[in-house]
Length: 257
Ligand SMILES: [Zn+2]
Ligand SMILES: [Zn+2]
Ligand SMILES: [Zn+2]
Image 1 (cartoon, helix red, strand yellow):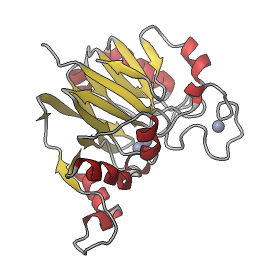
Image 2: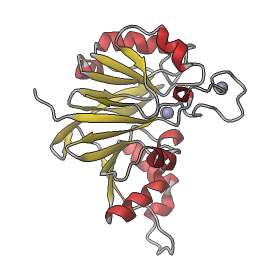
Image 3: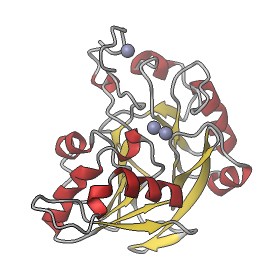
Image 4: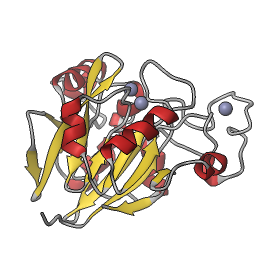
C-alpha cells in the first residue's frame, strides 16, 4: 500500500521528570551532550501539510519555540498523566493564531480527566482572559484526518489501558509496560516504530531498555526509535550497545516514515 510521505519530529524524549531531572546530581543530568537534554515526551507528525501534535507536555511552550511549531491542526492524546497533558493551557496560542477550535483525540478516560483537571477550560462562565478552545473527540476505532488513516492501538501502562497510534508505516507507542498481542499484530513490520524505554531496571509502568529491545525485535520494524528515556540512559554510551536498527531518539530529531 502507498503511504503519503510522513515526517515525525521528536519534540521531547524524556521520562516524566525530563532530563536533567530537577535537583539531581548524577552524571547524565550534568552531561554536556545536547542529546542528553530531554524535555517531556511529545512529537509532531506532519502529513499532507497538516501538523498533528502527540500529547501536550508540560514543556509544550518551549518545544514549540525551540522547533518553530507555528501551527497545530489536531492533538492526539495517549493518556492523562501529567507529563502528557500538563501543557494544555499553552494550546491557546494556536487557537489565537489559527482563529478556531483545536480537535483533541483521546480515549474516554483521558478526555474525562482533561475535563475535570482543566475544568476552567470548559466553564460556561464568561472569562476576561483567554482559555484554550478544544473540541474533545472520543476515539472509537480507526479514523481519517486529511486523507490520513489513523489507527488507535491499545497499550498497557501498568494495569491502565492507554493509546498508541499507527499512521501508515509509522507506529507511535509511549508509556507502555506491555503490548496486547492484537497490537503487536497491528504494527508488525512497520517502517518506523517509536517505543518507550525508561531505564535498565524494571519498572511497573514502563518497559525497561531490555524489554523494549525484545519488543522491538518481535515487532520487526525497519527502524525503531526509543523515547520516554530516563536519566539512567546516557545517549552516547547507551547508543553504542544497541542492536542494529534500534536507536535512542533525541529532542529535535526528525525522521521520515
Ligand atoms: Zn509519561
Ligand atoms: Zn540525574
Ligand atoms: Zn504515563
